[in-house]
Every structure is written in structure tokens, then in C-alpha cells.
Image 1 (tube, rainbow, N blue to C red):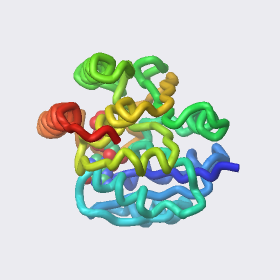
Image 2 (spheres, helix red, strand yellow):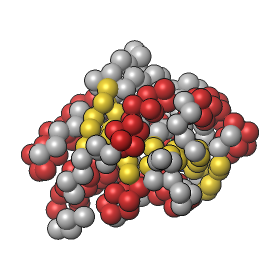
Image 3 (tube, rainbow, N blue to C red):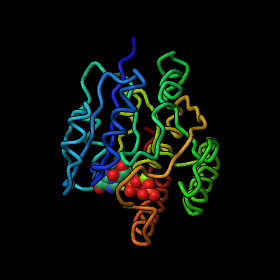
Length: 232
Ligand SMILES: Nc1nc2c(ncn2[C@@H]2O[C@H](COP(=O)(O)OP(=O)(O)OP(=O)(O)O)[C@@H](O)[C@H]2O)c(=O)[nH]1
Ligand SMILES: [Mg+2]
């Protein structure tokens, strides 16, 4: 029987985090939910803990938070699910993400928000387009086409370890997709619904600075991973 850990990076998400953790637990899928907080100045950590999550801390940065969450996963968990802490991902899709891995047919199952139902305003034009372009590039490079850089995803823990993830900020998601494709993992993309964040403030797509910083980081990741010779 597979055991599942959920890792949620969260920075100043005191409003949405309670609902996110509760919705994850309500699916009955996770054996543990880990919220990774790095220097939130609000009640994110307390709320997450009250809702039933284990809270760990990490230095600032989306990728660093995800990596710290992975390190904190209990040894018995063999599947790791990632999703954002802002309430925009819909945890009810977790069984569909996890099942192909638990059944042994796939190693990496990623949601696609562009193929699912999207609440109006939940994704902007740049996010939709950049996910498509990244998918065309991975198809050219590795023969795997994604339609989104969706943060909601599940992966076999031992497969993730072999990917040797390095990205410390917003390139983390794309790095995982590229390395999973390059490593020949058995990959499945499924449509997932997407909502607007359920409270709090945008750190990335909702601000010009956030979009610029994340976009730059994502493009740098694309070149770095594509140019690297490692085949893990
Ligand atoms: N731990 C941690 N979490 C982060 C960091 N930056 C962003 N996050 C979390 O990563 C997720 C994605 O950030 P968002 O601000 O929602 O970015 P977005 O989805 O592009 O923008 P929205 O339109 O607001 O949803 C959220 O759960 C954030 O709390 C960080 O430096 N550390
Ligand atoms: Mg968001």
C-alpha cells in the first residue's frame, strides 16, 4: 500500500491555508500534510498547524520550500503530492493524481489547468501561454508535451530523488517537468480544475514584479536544464 505525503509551499497565506489543508485531508488520500513556511509575517504557520498540517520552515524561495518539504517527508511515504497554499488548486483531484502512481502504471502525474475548468480570472494570459510554450519545448527536446506548468502534481519519491532538483525559486516546477521527461519517467497529464486564490495576496502572477522575476527564473531554468549534460 502506498503512503502519500502532501507538500504545500506557503508564504503569507493565513486566509486560504486552513481550507487548503482541510480539503487535502478530506480526500482521505494523504498520510501527512506538510506546509512549508519561510518567514511568513502572518499566522500561516499557526493556521496550518491547527488545520492538521505539520509545519516546517525553509529559507525564502519557492524551490527551496518544495525541497525542504521533500526532506521533511516521513520515510514510509513513497508518493509526494505538491500543490500551492493559496486555495487555487482543487484538492478533490488528488485521488486522480495519485492513483496511477499507486497502481504502478506511472511515475509522475501532473495536473493541467488549461485542460480543466478554470474560474474566470484564475489564470492570466501569460501563465496560459508560458505553460504551452514550455510544453512545446519539452516536446522538441524530449518528446513529452505538457499543456501547463501546473503546481499540482504527484510523483514517486524515489523517482524525484533521482531527478536531483536544483532550482531554488520559481523554476522548480519546470525543472521537474523537464528532468522527468529527460529521465524517461512514465508521465501522465490529467485535467484539473482551477480557482482564483481563496484569500491573501498574489506573490507572482498578480504583480508585474512577481511575473517578471518568475518569468526570468523560468527562462533561465529552461536554458540551464536543456544545456546540462546530466541524464538523470
Ligand atoms: N514557502 C514559500 N512559498 C512561496 C514563496 N513564494 C510563493 N510561495 C507560495 O507559492 C504559491 C504560489 O504563489 P502565488 O502567489 O499563488 O503565485 P501565483 O499562483 O502565480 O499567483 P496568484 O494569481 O496570486 O495565485 C503560494 O502558495 C505561495 O504562498 C516562497 O518564497 N516561499
Ligand atoms: Mg496562486
